[in-house]
Length: 143
Length: 114
Image (cartoon, rainbow over the protein chains, first blue to last red):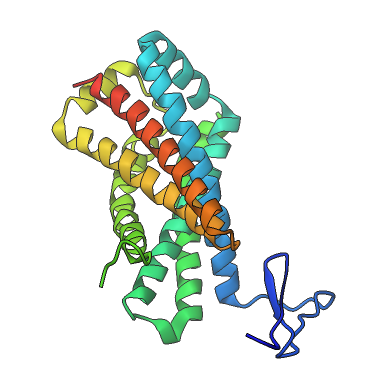
């Protein structure tokens, strides 16, 4: 359309007609919905990358036979570093999964007017479940 | 209505797989990580578990639902960056190939126990 020029800079669309140019030098706190959006994306990408590695590694270990599978699992599950990584992975699953339920509720038209409250409730649930898992795994890490 | 060409089918399947994964991942994480923390998983235990039809379907569901949800999610993120039609088709094709290879690899290893 004549008179409208769209400039894309780091994924931001700036319309010359409206005269709206975001001031990137001024820090404005992100809205709750934006935090939820970023958290969902980052955890989603991390989980997708992990899934591809996990499926490849486990499949190859199974196909190579019991000796390799048992030695690999024994090495991983007795490693404190892996157990800590596993907790981080569980945190990502919780954030992505519970925030995903929140998104499905919005798709169904439930809770749209209480987005902030539902986000904080979801994060409280994430924290509670993470503390439970942490306390369950902690004896294995400090052993 | 759900339409293949306007993206509503992929949106719908992303939600269906998400709901499925909540249940399937819950079973997977509870049994293998949190039911008996510290227990090292052995090949023989996996073989016994996967000879049960229920657990075989749980793992097959995890494999297919997980890969669809993950790869379609990656595709959605890439589409947000405004690539052209050719780029969109190429990336979609690459992701489908990755998905097929991973389902084949995971499927062959799961069928080893049947």
